[in-house]
Structure formats: C-alpha cells, structure tokens
Length: 483
Ligand code: DAH
Image: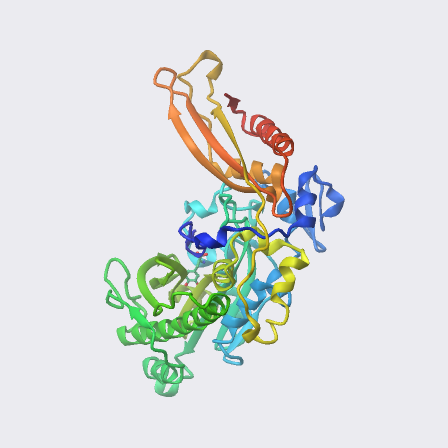
C-alpha cells in the first residue's frame, strides 16, 4: 500500500502548532475503560455486527472497539465540516453529469475488492495484519477508496466518477496520522465503441480543449512513459495513453490551482504580510499495481515539496474484469485530511473528530459559499507531557539470558496499544532508542509518548496513570520486559 496520500513529510508550518482544544466528548470518552454500550456495533465471540450487517469473526479479526466507534461518523458528508468542504471544493472541478459522485459506499469490503481486484500481489505488505484492520480473513475495513474502483467501472453509470469515503489503516501516531482518514478516488473513462470514429486520442484531446486553462508553473521532467519504470500498456497505442495522461494531468493541476488559490486567499485575509509565492507543482514517476504509467503530484508549499496525490492510466485488466473491455481511462486518489489541513491550516489531525463548537463553528456557512472560507484560528494550547517506556523484546529463551529468537515485532502493535489505552490524548509516539545487547542478542527499545489533551491541561498524575496502563498493556499484549 502506498503511503502517499498520508505522507510523513507533511508539515503544517511552525506557527500552526498551537493547538486548539476541542475534543471534549471524544477525549473524555476515551479516558476510561471502553464501555461497549457506547458503540454502534456489537461483537460477540464469533460475530461482528455493525449497522445491521453481521460478519463471522475468525483468527484474523484485529479490530479494536475504539476504531469501530468512528465508523458511523461520516465526516465527509457532514455539512460545514472541513473534510466535507474539501470534498465539495474538489468535486467542483469535476462537474456533473460527466462525473457522478459516490459518497455512501460502505467501509467494510472484501479482500478481493481492496486488493485482488486491483492486482495487489499476495505478498504485498499492505495485506498484513499489522497494516490493515481485518473483520475476518476475507473481509477488511477498506484501506483506500481504490477498493471501489472495479465495482464502479462495472456499474458503468457515468463517464467519470468521484468516490469519497473514510479509510482505515493501522499506523503511526502523530499530528498528521490517524487510523481513520478520508480519501477521494476519481476516474474518467472513454469508450472505443462510442467515441467518434473510434478514435480515443482525438476524443480525449477534444475534451482537454474544454478543460479550464491555468498559468501555474508545472515541472514534468520525465517522458510520458518509460519502458522499464513507467511502461505503456500493451493494449494501448502510444497516442491514446499520452492523450489520457494529458487529460489526467490538466484535470488534477486544476484541483491544485483551486485548493491553493483558496488557501492563499485565506492566509492573506488572516495575515496581510503572508508571503505570496507563485504556485509550483511537479509530476514524479510512481508505481501502483493498478495503473501504468503512474505519477504522483507534488506541490511546493511553504518551503517544502509535498505529495498530494497518486494517479495513472488505469490497467486495462481492470476494465476487462469489470465487463467493460472497450473502455480506457485514468484514475487518481487523494487524501482529504492533508488537503484540508493545508487549506484551513489545521495543525492536528485529531481535531477533525472534535464535536466542540469552538472548532466546528469556525467552518459554518462554508459549504454553501466557499468564499466564506477562513483560516482556522487555534485558541489555546495545552502543555505536552512526555513519558518514556523502555523494554526488552520477548525472545523465546529470554529467561535463560539470550540466544533466543526475537518475537515478531511490529511498531503498529505499539501504536495500537497506546491508542487503545490513551485514546486521543496520545498526540505522538516515536522510537527514541533501539539497541541489541552484544552478549545476549536481545533487543531493547525505548519509545517516547507525548500525552496532550486538546481540551485541558493534563496533570502529571493523570498522565502517569495512563502511562502506567500503557506499560501494563505492553507487557500483557506483547510480552515485553519493562526496563
Ligand atoms: N490508492 C492509493 C493509495 O491509497 C492512491 C491511488 C494511487 C489511487 C493511484 C489511484 C491511483 O486511483 O490511480 O495510496
């Protein structure tokens, strides 16, 4: 799975680090032990039920209740929520009826939809239990909106579509990573049987002429295809793939112009001294199992190149398998949180889940009129409280003092334990030290956890209490030996 739509290189700008407090319900909810009656799902030993749908559980099930809690929030369709506003602004660049908007696809999908239909190999790391939430061995919480591509091609209800949805990944904890986030998938198709004279390239170029022009500086240093790195598909003529790529690139450059012009306008309104630099973007060759050639788009924003989306010419096998072998086209995937964080200068991804009016009221009226868009104003920042935890990893013969094989260890297991115990007061978790004992061969690790509430100052005692529970759970769940 590409991590591109949620890059760790994302930077929010130093002044934006001041935190606004807004998680009153969510935070307090997650402080105490989880009470199952608060969740909209039930889970017995052998069945998982959510929103009236039941799934058998098996040994693959790894979905913690705190994730389930969020499934029904649907921020991307909540009026005046920044995720929903971001979705609508992008949709405005892909007009109906050419593009049909799908915003209600259910988040639980089969491994076939999420992986196989897109050509992910069986040994792809994205399939592992450390990266993906499994309901059972063949059912997952979708890890990307691409999971719906094949079905939407098969539906064949429009020439293009946008799919916006919540997606789920086991991942790090920091200000720009959260196990639930939102993506938008886009695609545009042309049909060999219906374009004039069967000439796809000519039809696509005619459509390109109808796209809005822009004067943004675009760097596109590589040739449209590259035999090894970014090959033309055997089913495509060169001029077809090149026309489709040109339509794709021009359409997505339009999205960037739209978003960043609005972001600049909001930044300027808040600070007339804002340094207004010309917008620069660049296309980078990429790889995805379901497109070829493929690219990522990067934007130069406040001194850094930032990945904003992945895209490419859809592999012909997807269309063939979806029963529409005469279609050709492009697809893209974009992470909505990252765009919303830029657009509004929202400094912490946890804020999107806030129900506090001091957060939500700042976006009132924007869904109806994007010109009401203003930079988010953080109102206060509560102090952080760092705590370290150091431990020896379990080894099969640790009692004997060494030589044993190290347990299977994945950092996401640590992340999940911290999230389970501390909820949203865990702002950031990072490894600060790791070493292997020269004699025993045992590995020691140290993690630093930054506890910070978005709603109030945590006392040291409170932070200690949570931290003690985290330590206990690490021993209980991972069998580590605390140092
Ligand atoms: N699904 C990819 C991800 O989550 C993003 C993506 C890349 C979507 C290329 C696409 C595409 O449709 O063509 O990272």
